[in-house]
Image 1 (cartoon, rainbow over the protein chains, first blue to last red):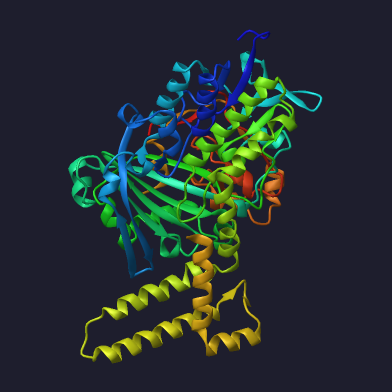
Image 2 (cartoon, rainbow over the protein chains, first blue to last red; image 1 turned 180 degrees about the horizontal axis):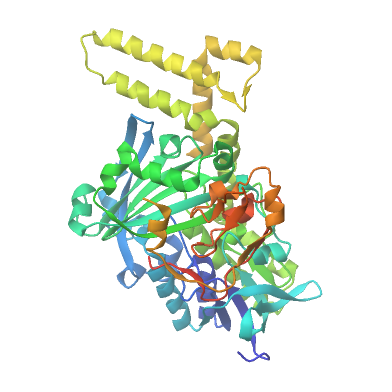
Length: 461
Length: 89
């Protein structure tokens, strides 16, 4: 690359956030350089399994006709599991078998991200791969380009969009974000497991290219650690995911690799993946959506988007890709406005913040801001309570010689005593509650249960 | 399934230089050695002397070790362009 060459915008990272920025900017006539450190877009990218596409379908209508998608997701089955018991609820709709397919598709990131970057190239963006950006170039307090590792050297631009993922070293170097603490991230591990197409369709009750998601919420899927498990259907593989909030993972002293294996061996998981052959193993961090850990999203000549800016809906919805695309589009729009005025100052780029605030990105981050605090404050909710709830459900349907009313009383008594046991729980060799509170919880364990369920539902759903 | 059996399935272009450098002197005095628990490929292991040994060949560049190491023992960077893991799926 010629050192005197200057672009309007350099976008670092060809994931869903960066490529959306590059695409929107190129369409608007800007000269864009999109830089990717992998050998191809998607080479370094990990997600659970569903690409959420409301933004993509607006930018490229009916994209699924040409994009390398696997299956559209028509429904979800949610499991609460303990060691021996399970309760599940399924939600699915025939409507989701029609365009726009509920904006949910399983994809392989290596294929999809490459396709999407090609669309940005067709729109006029320039893509370079195999290139690590080590630092930003500054003129005083203003970003004027990037420093690439190796021969490419320094490249200049009016503005830089940093979308280099959760570990964004650039956002940290720019001082827009501090290094993460363990409580602000989750570790996701994923195996791509191959099965014959007919087996997948029989096993998950699918016709053609229909797909489903199976979601396990914490409980025994993670040995009580805040996190969960997922199975997503691709055409001829399953994506099997175990994800763990890093802070409780550390406290548990379990090894992450062992938890993944336990999950796959669990009685309510193993039958879904039986006979399958693992063909790839992936792992990555995800930001736990951080309204309360909000970094600054822009400075003079610089904006950050996607996981780098912690944009992820860490709730029961767990959507990352559309937050990435929405923030990537907002960043591009802010730069287009800045270009009209030839003013890339912080003040001019603050339009980015305005667009984010108006979109679902900031609204949803704000709405689910309490979830992590909740998971941290009430760990029993995701372990002991799940045991008690699933036990109660199983007791209700237990067949024996007792009249049903007796059986139901027995069920409630067991439920109550299970709750009491968890409330008296010990953490780090100390009781988690004061003596007075323990006495209260012993007398009326249900009060706390109901209160926590309400609080949990508000934080999570 | 053993982690080594999983890693042979992946496509790596291993660089000659490690992209993560650990300071074993600091690790020796680390009270928790959390990296040996959280690394999703088990790249951090303890040898017979109790020292932390790091091998970068199977690294998936996830970043977890960087977050949990609070002792300042790691210099963490991405591998050179095109090196490291290349996911096929």
